[in-house]
Length: 355
Image (cartoon, rainbow, N blue to C red; front, side):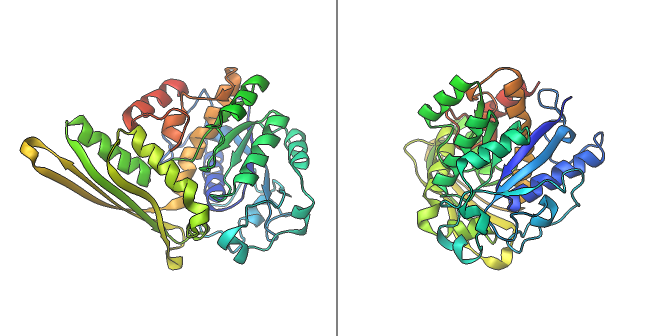
């Protein structure tokens, strides 16, 4: 198969783990990789992915090759392997919009070149690097920056994978413009491989499938990477809470008391994420069922497996002349797609699309 040429909007922890996953696949395309749900999606292996460019505003990253950018002090995800063919991909300046608003502005120094970058310069770079898919992994709350990258990709004709909870695929006007341009759009808000939302929605589907009535639920998440540092600011985390609520509603949780979202930054956890989930339901004769679960994961590799599927799904959509918001694979890949589905239905829809 032809290579899938990918650009990364943001070179933080999720981008680092995804790039390592790609490098691992490139090193031995035939080996079975734990966590790789589909060996092929639309005929594409993970080894067919090439990261050809990246964008950032961090002075420790802009102007450096990709491998060097991932050595920045704000990148805390584990190094499992070195980058291979993609290690020298350039990290280019992105416009300095709202990506560093809130706590991130206290730990990241913006590159001078970011003050001169524009949406036009990003679109031009996407064309020059012949990018098939742009993966947006910017901080939650960076609505202006996310929108700018989506617009630049639309101009350049590159498919978009929006890993953030900002409204992109759910924006009917923007989706219509992508459809008119013949460009695929996948989003919004990446659903981690075996993460808090995946676990939580599976529990809800289990109870509803047995005929129980849901009474209340909560999902509390803490972590120590820059994502959780950013989410500690309530003005930045609002869209994340909305996105998680969308995922729970799609699983069947309606008219139920509940809350789900990030609740704290604990620096020494680094890239480790802890989830505490509780579901209460009423069963036979009014008896109560209560489930309490604790999940401990390394946050960024948990995202990498889903990005691996999303990138290949985006390129497959382009090959099949699908454009605008692509619905088939989205419910399994994202918390807030335009049309959500319960976990089992979402998985079946994705596998059907991938075949």
